[in-house]
Amino acid sequence: MPDEERNDLTHPEKDEANSNVEPYSVYTSREKWFIVALIGFGGLFSPLSSNIYFPVIPELSQVFHKSVELINLTVTMYIVFQALAPMFWGTLADSWGRRPMFICCLLLLSVSCIGLALVPTNDYWLLLLLRCFQAAGSASTIALGAGVIGDISDRAERGGFFGVYNIGPMVGPAIGPVLGGALADKLGWRSIFWFLCIASSACAVVLILFLPETLRSMVGNGSITPPPISRPVIPIVGRNKPRSSTEKLPRKPFQNPLRLLLNPDILILLFFNGLVCAVFYGVTASISTIFHTAYPSLNQTQLGLCFLAIGGGMLIGSATSGKILDWDYQRVKKSILRKMLTQDDSFPIEQARMRLVPFLLVFFVACCAAYGWCIQKAVNLAGPLILLIGVGFFSMAIMNATQTLILDLVPDQGSSVTACNNLMRGSLSAIMVAVIQLILAALGTGWTYVLLAGMCVVVSPLIYVVIHIGPSNRARRQRKRETEGAEGSSSG
Image (cartoon, rainbow, N blue to C red):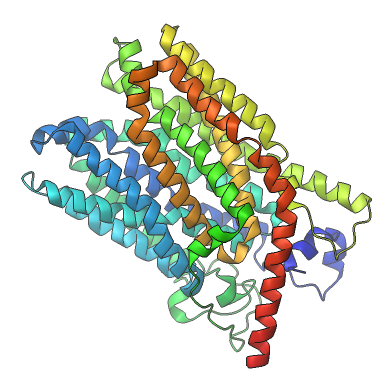
């Protein structure tokens, strides 16, 4: 039985009393929160680099003498590389370590931003190319951060960590358009890339100084000393813990992350999560255009501030849903212990994570449909803004639950499975962004968001499919791991 499941089915007080039971991680709760704060800072740059760019699209169209459609192509290519890059960096991180990959991504982002800040206005091709490099550097930080959380936390606390970690990535959509508009207005469009360069470089320095290596195939539960390149310059985390410099774990071989898609339960979760994310992007991508049409008195600054509604909902949803996930997890755990479940049985992690999702989905669907009709009827501006808060809150709560479960299912491939999640989300979201204006023109605002809400209703049975088939698929993966481990031991 995996260490996580064994810990799930034992009482914490018994574990503490039993000195033979190794903790899942040697780090204290405070040290874990410090690590989560560090990677949350790094994860901020993926959405920030994307959203801070939106307000300058009309100006770039003028200075580069290109149509808005061609400038929008730089957004499309960013989304494409945002989906593909984590497949590369995440797989390397699962083999070579989280820390060096995290730092490399931030340095790539910083260098690409220097190029974007200096790009000549007669070289549109270079703008397009550098945006691809910018996405390749920034987008992978979210997958790498998810891998770190899988390394340092067991299932009982993972939801809370994941929820707070997501605050970093969710700040980007909330403040990105406002910050980008303010910088462009005061200092010009090039200033947004100088800002990203300085901020990402500062983050890289912070990680070099303080972030420890957490990859379990390299450092175990944190008690094994990694190679010098994987050690922080200032080791303030775990410095008082006993260390072993002699024990060495075998390097984890390269694993194709796309093979994870062969698992039915993981594939279903990725698709469900990706569709909810696509609907969310269908709302956010059209905010400025439909608000400008419905409320023509709003200026550009006021339109940018409207994004704070959905961003605020996302922040609240991300922070609170993680705590709710952990609370509900403990309820399921206590219920199972009361039934005297033996340690040979598998903990129903799918039920513990997903049983609240149908209720969250009902509210998400209602907010989405009501938002469309409020815009259609041009009701008081407070109405759609309140509903945007609801869309942000419930979408993040749903995605938090599914992403935490995805990480629970393969914690040893945390970065790889999160990269697959980014690939699915990015692909479906890119399609949605490409067609949302066409749907709005064909159906009108009200029926468009009824359609998007209806898509979520259609896929809602997938929640129960995962709960039903999940345990058998987990057992199959566990048997396969044990067989491969036995073969590796005999060959060694």
